[in-house]
Length: 314
Image (cartoon, rainbow, N blue to C red; front, side, top):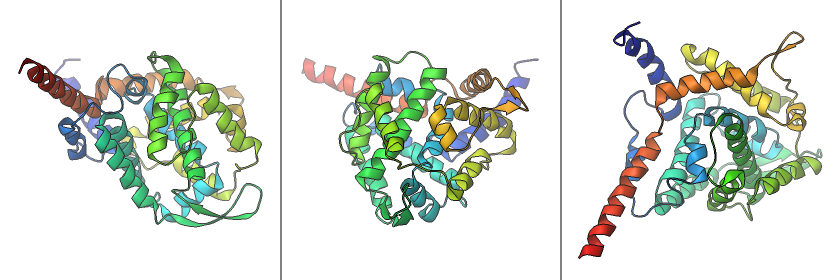
């Protein structure tokens, strides 16, 4: 097959994938370009564990896994179920989450703080009532440190686990990622976020040990929605593989709580891990080795470095 034909086959698929992740088929979103004009190096940078994890294709699995885990907490689920437009505008909600992740990961410190404050302002009106894991009536607020803690734990564990399975080496190891991403937790009001992989796992299981997690009809509805996410038709086969990979990556305890099974065909288990690896490799070939956020951050860092050199010569 000639090289002239290949772009004609791959470009529409790349555009649809980019649209799903960023909200636009071509170009770089303006909010990403703003990272170039930041005034400091940001919380993270080249060689950081956060850049290694958030810049890799396993994030495509991690996002699905995080949604599944977050749905296990009835308070966090109530906020999504009652107040979110996840049914009407699921990609809009996804784009908003990606925007926050990129801003904290690649923006300067002021942009990261402002992006987190923006999310918290949106959360001010996400309040209501729910029945907790013990069957007792309770009140939820999306900015409640207790619920913010669960969301942070589910997110960090999902992105770390997916990268451990399908990504490359993490500078400083898994503990470095948990420790660095604790900054994001603090920006979102999480008190004393975990700093090591062991602490992260212990905190996650602590919620289950205390009986604070459960799976009910609402949980199953959201899980089913995530399973059949309204992505473009051309992306559906790949998405099905990524969903299977996310389910396979769950710890048995949480997979059982979600009433999910390891991917299988009748009695035969399916090779979800290897199939996921192939899909992620294909996504990487389409999207390239660097995220738009990382490229913009590197432009800022180069500018700041040049300014520092010029100042030292003056």
